[in-house]
Image (tube, rainbow, N blue to C red; front, side, top):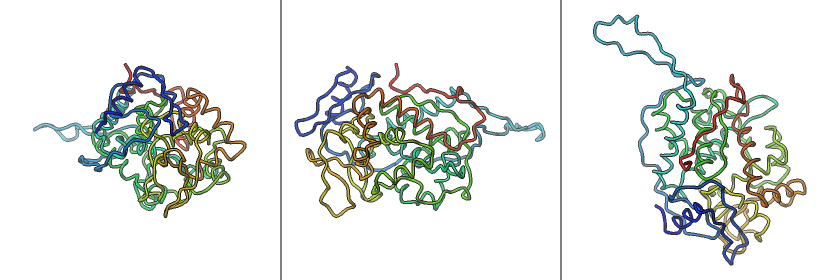
Length: 371
């Protein structure tokens, strides 16, 4: 549950204050512009104790499949009615219906704060990212359209380890709104996670269809944290992203942490892993990073607190001459980061989706922190 420190931090956020880093860290906080309500999540620039996670303990209910944003059902027949008169009805969801789904996810995030650092938000974003990041522009395969991570072998790929927690988290929402496809639900969950963790508004539109196991993508399409810049370019260029967009999307590492029982790596990237800011980029530039001495895979550790980590792919962003200027731009201006991160996430979540709607039909959802 919320600690006094997190409550103080969130309260300070609401008043628009900025924090300087603790003496042991060069990190500085530039806080999001929108006011946020008091809760268990807050921004910090120094290490704090990790909260215990007890896992997801709420029930799953009936899961019914949706398709292409439409849900078909039959009227109930009362005694004496002729069966032929009971005809299928077509439910076409509108913006307010998807806002209701968003609100249900946001409520669940608030109520179930027993995961990692106090929020399922980071793992929901990771689910949406990994479901979308399998896209191959040359073959037109992969992407968020299909939700094929529901099946083995894709759900068992090493890069997707631990994402069952996110899929299970969303199943009660799917049961509550059976007309929404898993594909739309997962990406909408990612949008909700970003906004509820004080990130930018992410425009979103429905239209993804669930597919069967035959559409599962091969392993190896997602980034491998042990690699460097050539690997990053190969992975992201395959999806259609350039160097600037690679660096912008990497800013998602401001959120969440690595786990030894999943990726093998250990620890968070920032001191506030449930609040999205440009702190990730400032830490890359301002902190001194050394190889961690341990029995796990090669990862970097900050010299100041020895509580943060960076992967080889993270450090590649400051080693590469083409990547580094973008790191510097985002570290300097949180608003610039938010704007470019927003555009890249919209593009990522729509890769390979055969929309029948236009870009002008995207929705922008009201966050729970909005007045």
